[in-house]
Image (cartoon, rainbow over all chains, first blue to last red):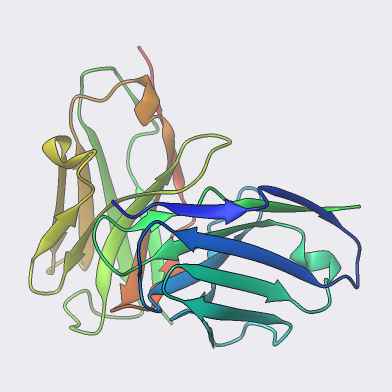
Length: 107
Length: 119
């Protein structure tokens, strides 16, 4: 199985901050990586797929980069509605796996 | 716009079989453009992919659950289903159904349904 390690697991930030979350894969996954945002009591929401393609309707302050084994999700200017937990997921091979999550909280 | 809705018992006894159905609206479950999956999330924990089924009927399961999982499709009802046998307390989770186009990630999700395993 391909393991995904997210860092940090917890992040405290202020509105307006630039935030970067890293996802490292245990083996190369090309660009088969997606990022999700999850708020309490809600289903995850797809933000980015193919490592850097913004899902329709997602604000442009979200961006993704990387390929192979190292990926990043960046929120350029953190907004109040962005406080949530973020997960990466690899779609390179079965079993599909998720990272452990990064919780972004208000400082 | 696709909509997915999970349904099934919220309480299952240990050793019994968990059965959930996902009803799809706004699109055909027979579409070759999508595949259909189940994901679960234990309370306060992260996401775990359970398995997926393609329009062709091909299924792919998480090896950690493979011996206990069956995913099937009922095209006449535009539904797909999950069965997880011999459940124990660690199977307590919110179960989500979701759909994805190949390689893009799950872009439509059901609201999730909490299934508790307890006697």
